Amino acid sequence: MSFHQLGVAAFFQDNSALLDLVNSQVLAKPLICLGDGHDGIWNLFCEIGEKQERIEILDWCHLIENLYKVGGSFQRIEEVKCFLEEGGRGRRYLLL
Image (tube, rainbow, N blue to C red; front, side, top):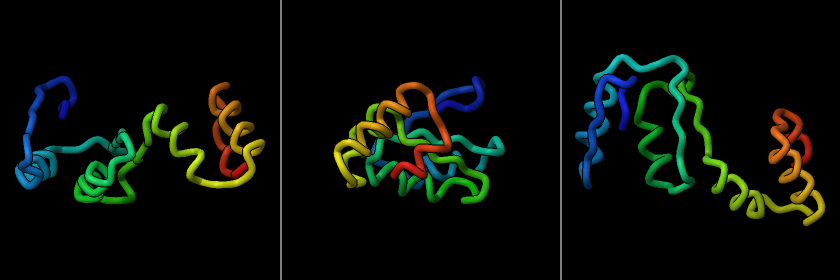
């Protein structure tokens, strides 16, 4: 966990201590949460700050990996993937 270039903290199998430390900080608004898709990470994000103040982002590699789990035709998925690789935003929701 990095705190606005002021310090770094690490926790091993102690989520409650991690959450206590993070929630005791003045958090950026919006708070950007970058995760890898693992349920444990998203469960932690749910405990940090307020939902309306968080932007949760799935990292690029896991975004592409999980795109196939959404379903739809292979052609549609490839179209969305190409659009994302070109830096497109917004329209991808309509394509799915």
